[in-house]
Length: 256
Image (cartoon, rainbow, N blue to C red; front, top):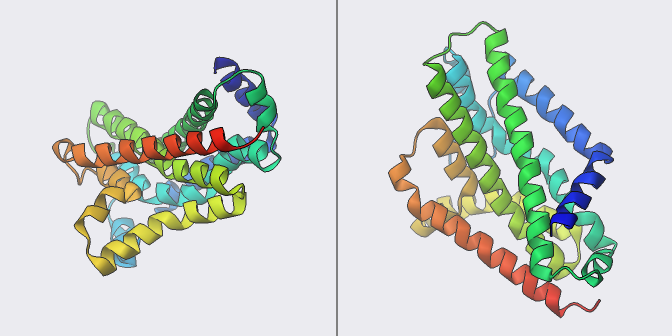
C-alpha cells in the first residue's frame, strides 16, 4: 500500500496536469480576493447573495470566509485530480499489473483515495493561503486576531478537502463499475447541483445531509455550529464507506 502511494506521487511529480492545476488555483484565488469576485456552485441561494458579499467591506478574515463560496467552483478544476489519480490505470486497464503484484483490492483503492485526499489538501491549502496573502497585499484589516484567522482558514481547508473527496468517491465507484471516465466525471460534476435542485423541488429534509458542498460552505463561513455537524459528518463517512466498499466488491469481480 505504501509502495502504491509512493508510485502515484512519483508519477504525479512528472505529470504536467498537476502543475497546471496548482497554477490555476493560485491565479484564481488571487484574482477572486483582489477583485472581490464571488461565485459558486449553488441553486438554493440566488445570485443576489454573491453580489451582497462582494459589496461588503472586506477584511482578511471575511475574504477567507467568502473563499468558501468560490471554492465550490474549484470542483471543475480539481476533477483533474480524480482523472490523474484514478483515470489512467482504469481506462487503460493497467491496474491489473498492480493487483497481480500482490496488493489487495481494498489496499489499492484506499491507497489511491489517500493520494487523492492529499492532493486535494495541498490544492485547497494553496487556495486559502493565496486568499490570505491577497488580502494582506490589498492592505485590508485583519478582521480579528491571528488565532481566529488561522482557525477559520484551517477549518475551511479541512472541510473543503474532506467533502470534495466524498463527492469524488462517487466518481471512483462509477469509474470502476462502468469503466467509463466520461460517465464518472459527468456525474461528479452534476451531483452537487442535482442534490440542491431536488432539495429545492422535493423539499426532502434528509437530502440536506448529502449537500456536501453546502455543509462545507456553512462550516467555513461560520453559519453552522459545530454541535450541529454530527449527522452531516456521519452521513458523509457512511457515504464514503459505501462507495469504497462497493468499489472494492466490483473490483474483486473483475477478471485480471
